[in-house]
Picture 1 (cartoon, rainbow, N blue to C red):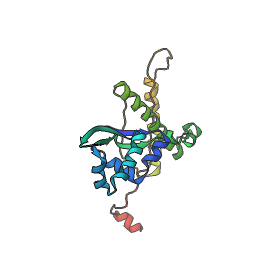
Picture 2: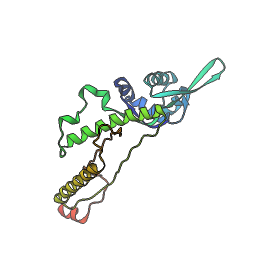
Picture 3: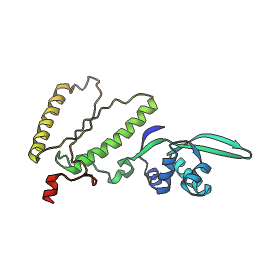
Picture 4: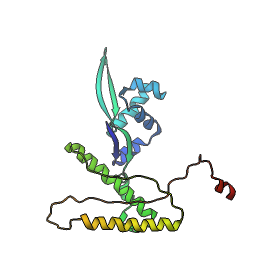
Length: 207
């Protein structure tokens, strides 16, 4: 089972968004038959079988084994991944194109870059799995609190200069070198506000 499967086919994306099928995919983190699933999701076995066939047809679940019980063959299936992510490729005709924005201060450009990353990483993961090779990637995720908007702007400027310096240092512009081209994306955006935080004394005074 993969950690994450990226769905690129529009029909598969549509099939995966059905609430009942989402529940079935979650339950199929462990192998189960239609009979076993019926008890967990509260549906008749025939109804579960209908949804399983749709998920299997789109490659979202796979057959693990077949168990013979008298005159009946029980099929045991499992989800192909622990989690699923729908690629912008599933909406190719209307997916965002980073080349349309190209503004480092645009939230829409950041979103387009994120969409492109999902699409490209999905294809790379599939290719690496088929070749039985490890995919070389690197990521940093963290939080930073800025005292003022000016501090945030100064940080962004210094970060841009530092990244540009590193790119100039390590980028091999020789077309005949045979090196492997890599994609570099650096992002900075506000964190989502949580609703269960206790307000600070300053926030209470300003309330």
